[in-house]
Image 1 (cartoon, helix red, strand yellow):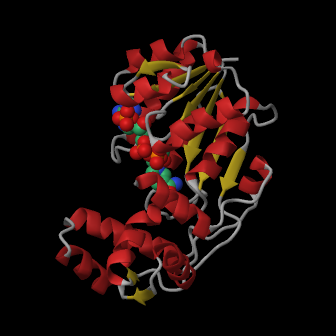
Image 2 (image 1 turned 90 degrees about the horizontal axis):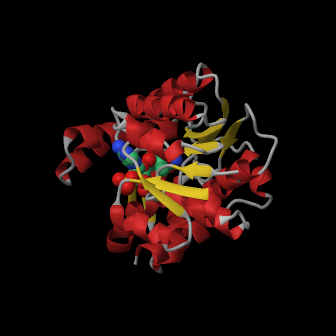
Length: 288
Ligand SMILES: NC(=O)c1ccc[n+]([C@@H]2O[C@H](COP(=O)([O-])OP(=O)(O)OC[C@H]3O[C@@H](n4cnc5c(N)ncnc54)[C@H](OP(=O)(O)O)[C@@H]3O)[C@@H](O)[C@H]2O)c1
């Protein structure tokens, strides 16, 4: 039963391919798809089949999906273009006769005011009307997203945010990839919508303590207002759009939109999610 993993040249997709292989899924039944030729070559070294795809070029998608039973559509990274791109992938899956599309979405994408939710909500709606069998993995926040904050704290001893007392139930990309792998290679997920998140919702003091443990120096969290945060980010050289995005995301976090601990993720993978400090340590190790 052949599966295609889009975004396999990215962090999450590659981990999914590796997890499928580790679970004994036949390498020749896995097609790893992405754009970057160098990373496609390194995926081919794992023994899986590979295909160059461009989410903006439907014929590349149809060609890659031909003969596949399931496609894991890893959400694209080009914000503003993603809904059209995902639409191309869903249409290509129909054209190619794929049975099931599994999609990586965002927490409560259908109802959440999370700044990232609208693209995912629109994609889930396209899936719902596609006539395909679907499964939706509403992935929560990656622990790896805090690597820049960790590096800043290594240099300054501070984590600066406007998150206040908002909590984050993050998990490692490897945890989310393991869940995708389970859904790809086992039965019983048709029509499922999983709210995937870490087992523990931590706050910024917890993050500072975990970062301190990893970098080996005292770290404090400095809580600032959204306006102060925006000024700090602009002063540091971020453009207005990016700085505004970061502040809005901190506002979402302050409002608890990334805090849910549904237990879906640990239930799917059959083990606890990776604790914050371990996830950060692994992320630092992977980045050197
Ligand atoms: N939950 C979270 O905390 C979180 C954080 C960041 C992102 N995300 C979402 O989760 C996805 C996976 O995360 P990640 O860490 O693996 O991201 P990533 O490393 O940036 O990987 C993104 C993947 O999307 C592929 N891609 C982007 N545009 C494409 C296009 N036009 N045609 C074909 N492939 C395209 C890239 O292919 P190439 O590299 O070959 O160009 C790459 O394989 C992201 O794309 C984003 O939607 C979630």
